[in-house]
Amino acid sequence: MRYFVFFAYNGAGYHGWQSQPNALTVQQEMEQAFETLLQEPIALTAAGRTDAGVHASFMVAHFDTSNSLPENLCFLLNQYLSNAISINRIQNVSDSAHARFDALSRTYQYTISSVKNPFRYPYQYYIKGSLDLAQMNASAALLLEYEDFECFSKVNTDVKTFMCQIEKAHWESLENQYIFTIKANRFLRNMVRAIVGTLIEIGQGKRTLDSLHKTLRSKDRSQAGYSVPAHALLLTDIEYPKTLFKQYDSKD
Image 1: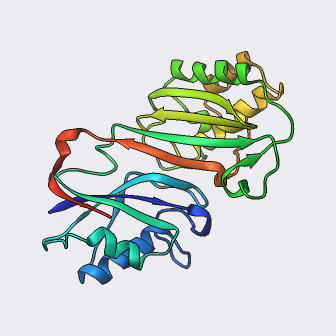
Image 2 (image 1 turned 90 degrees about the vertical axis):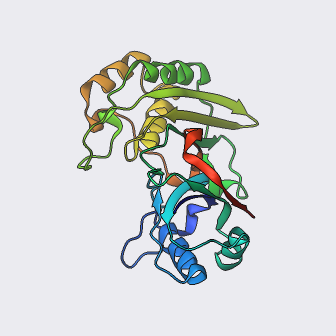
């Protein structure tokens, strides 16, 4: 049987989601927990691969098992895992359901602070001075007119297409913070951080709205802005068709 596990993690102490030799990752720690508790090999396939330092308040992965799951599996996993990972729910899905390929959309949030705050630093990117919110929102809205985002993709990335459908992209200002929210059917590697860096430069007056058109049409990463730090990036939501889900549902 196949299950979706819904979880969250603080990515500060991990080298991203995906398992890799000689580095601690979220996938590695979670698979070890599942295998210890279920006494069988478990392979987790996530909805995406977050980079080192990126956080997720909402992430999904699927796994297969032929054994019955204990009703309190979420509780047991949370007892075993470090405080940086929280298992929120495990739900039975159709055998063909796929955490990555069946996702309808993903939503990310990036937080900038105009005030240096040592308590919020791990989750915010500090930038001295104000930003032109109106210009940044005008630039964010322009992104919805395009589908090819090669200019924001990490170079030498093994992908078949650079096409993405952005549904929402906007900034809001709240208590010395600039919060960017972006929703799309898929994202390229480093895409969100490159978009944010480019929009920041527009907000600082270093780039113009017209230049963003040229950047997008260039399909050249060197024409876009810098990649902002990972620690202020948060995956906040993933949407799936409701028809994927079955009856079993374990919650912590």
